[in-house]
Length: 108
Image (cartoon, rainbow, N blue to C red; front, side, top):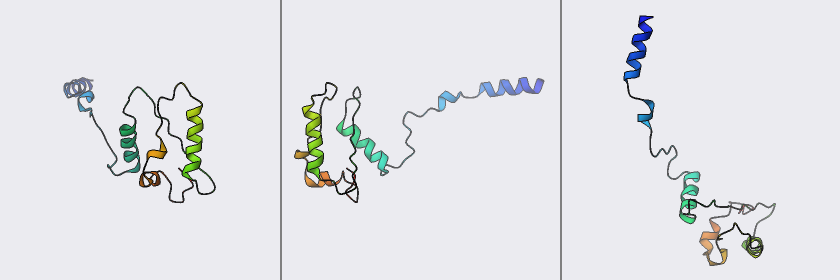
């Protein structure tokens, strides 16, 4: 019994677990796909109060930018009250657009 009391006193005298908290913990390297995506979201959607909506298009055949633009135009024309802003694909350079496609161009 005395050993348990001594052990409890010794352990409670040490540092608390909360003293070991890390303000910024990143377990993935900066070049990981999810880290790159997270950085892009922070860059393109800096408003912490809003939640970015990311649309993913997938088809059995190659997707064309014009098809995606058509869908985005329909969303814009629907005038949804919670949609504050959308990226206009027509102003992006072709190199930027290509970065959104999968290798087989079936996912955008």
